[in-house]
Image (tube, rainbow, N blue to C red; front, side, top):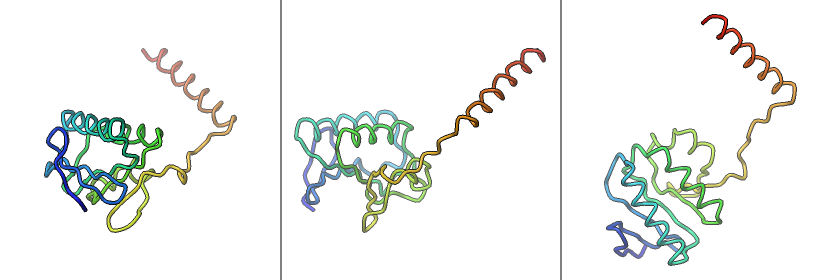
Length: 143
């Protein structure tokens, strides 16, 4: 892997067509870290035209709630997204379990093609609606 310094103080290395972003040894990312990552992704994807991005997650134990949504937005725009070395805590997150698939050597790729999304039948939707209406009516009378 070729390594180089990059924008905003983050390290970026190249592995084939993949640009791997390393935010450092921070275990818990906050909103500022997410903003830094977002800005770096804009530079790599829009300005430098890299179609495949990886994020080194070896030290990360917690990510802000917008992290996976941000990655999914890029994925929908046609960018390949990988996480490198995610820790067990990250891998247990529902979003990770649903949308990432194992590739090789502790690398996981965002892939929504095999996600099963439950769809309620019309009868189930009507039952749920009746229950919600009944629940609201019960709530009003009890107040």
